[in-house]
Length: 66
Image 1 (tube, helix red, strand yellow):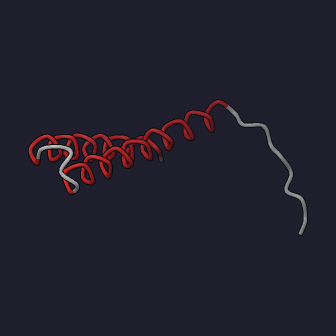
Image 2: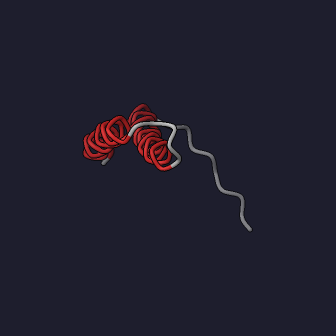
């Protein structure tokens, strides 16, 4: 397997990666809120609000990733 050349990241690439990491983090937050409700450690309303907020943030972040 050929070694892949490492290319230094430009500032646009760094911003893109930061936005991607943020979206992934928000997605994990939505799953965590859903799991907390499922296992009874959080009320249904709190979990629904957290999931809804995280999903809205993911949609907003995903528009900015491209």
